[in-house]
Image (cartoon, rainbow, N blue to C red):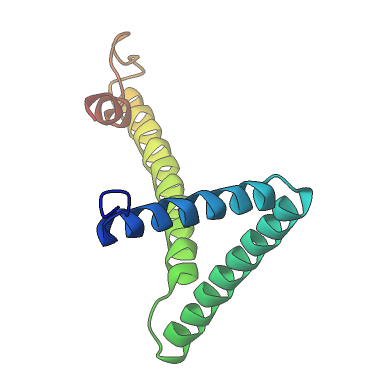
Length: 126
């Protein structure tokens, strides 16, 4: 008779496996419904919105502390890119004018056919 009775460890294992099976079935039923997808989509939207609010709040904190925030840094990066482009154009124009001056000082002799301006040589070496 004592042999038919399970040990406390076996009984605990059986109860645990039974509870696990019931929870798995309930989870499968909940996930299989359309409403679960809708709730998951709403929760995701809320998380994204809260993250955005958090980033905007941090930007305000940086702004109030008079420190550069993410927006300020991206704006400065754009301005720096535009300035670099303008400087490159000025450099190219300056080199073109130098070539014209050299050509006119050489009594109208044209520059060598294969000669590259310095900006073209600089760009190709990068």
